[in-house]
Length: 335
Image (tube, rainbow, N blue to C red; front, side):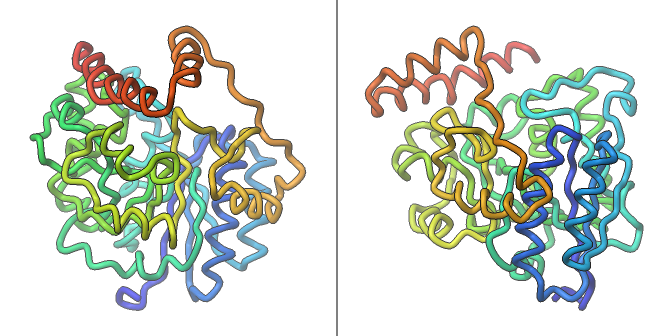
């Protein structure tokens, strides 16, 4: 283990996602009982007392340290209304990760709530980051997305749902200050929200780890060739690497997809949904019913109906045009 130090894990959540965080927490602790010293920090965006008690119940069961930290509000920090693009405003609290954690913590593993830890995190924790500030998954975005956040065609774009962070370098390289400046310059309207800002600032300071450490939903919803057709990613992982990630994932990340719903929603058919439900059964939310399918409105509802009616090959081709060109074009117009 790195310098025999304790393992430090960070989540960020609001009350609505406390249950999802709880399931993730159970999976983390259940699969890492041999880690001698582990501290878990939750950047707390107004989680209610009843849910905090449930989260504490989980960590107490595994004899772990849990620390709630009041999350920094990005709107208050910048005196402006920042747009989320996807997810909730709570995600922006991780941009202040350095100032919110104890000064003696030098390395931290940030995890989104919508993940399941499927094995030991020690290999990831001990990862050689090759002098970079973070290690993350190379994400499947086209070159058009890069333009909107000031990146060159072959610059790295990463998924920020799993990030191994060197906090010492984060401080020394003034990452927080650079992130806030970027958000302010763009008037709080950024493609992919806080993830877009992180990519803009950390693209050249990111070590891309093996995809088994962040096995995202597109790996399961699409064949490898379909991923290339649908997303047209730049310098992406090999088919062998993606297949390895699906076969032996250390971390499974239930990202959004137009082809499927997430495991806490009724009707999920993700190949790993049974794993998520297994950890839900071990959580204080075991009796909580699954969420209803969210109602779609407007163009999204129309598109969902059309895509379901189309043959798969045509559906992916049409979706590719919207994903690769349409979405970045619309965001480009807002700049």
